[in-house]
Length: 157
Ligand SMILES: [Zn+2]
Image 1 (cartoon, helix red, strand yellow):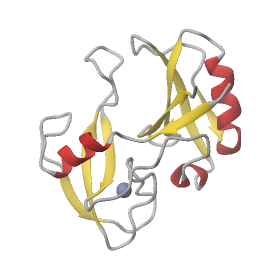
Image 2 (image 1 turned 180 degrees about the vertical axis):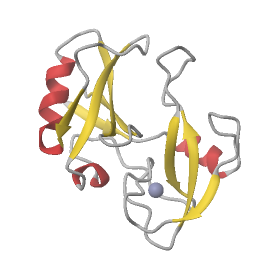
Image 3 (image 1 turned 135 degrees about the vertical axis):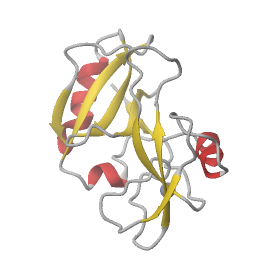
């Protein structure tokens, strides 16, 4: 089952950088990264130490419903190159030992039984196993400790 890791869409990132309100209706906060555990959801690399970053509430779902969780994310405040969708583990994923992953249906509902904290080395195999269920439309990768959304995984054609 070919899969791809998908970062946040560039148009949305540009909007947040330009002052678009976040999922809670607030402008993004600005802070200076210490370079440790500050993953940008666009380039999927840690925001380098000393660089400015945005902190904002993001809801990685198309519609509003009970499963549409909102949570904090970081973004590089300056322009960065979006991580190209692909099968290789993005840098910020590869550098962390484990993640919470869970599958969602086309209606963006959790597909129960898919959620688990898995070692990063097993993410690709686990995602392929989850996608064997045709009800699963996408998989979220979230921080194992803090539940923060990192990226999504889709089936690759
Ligand atoms: Zn970035």
